[in-house]
Length: 72
Figure 1 (spheres, rainbow, N blue to C red):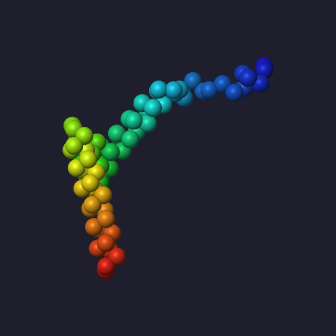
Figure 2: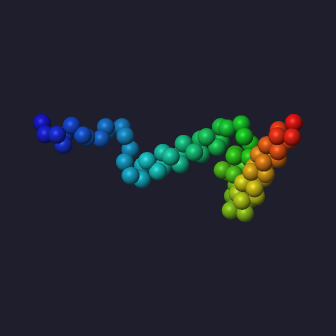
Figure 3: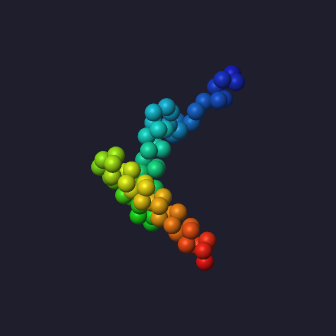
């Protein structure tokens, strides 16, 4: 057996574009299952404008809550 044979990729490990699809599905699964409701809205928005709106709303809420915690 040559050293090249020892370095084979396991058959269950995806390669190339399949890895990208797994990452996409993993991120979508996270977005759908998280309790941060803004993330769900970003993931399911049908247009880019709605996605941008929800990103701004989510970041704004995070900043506002951070300020309120800091003032306490």
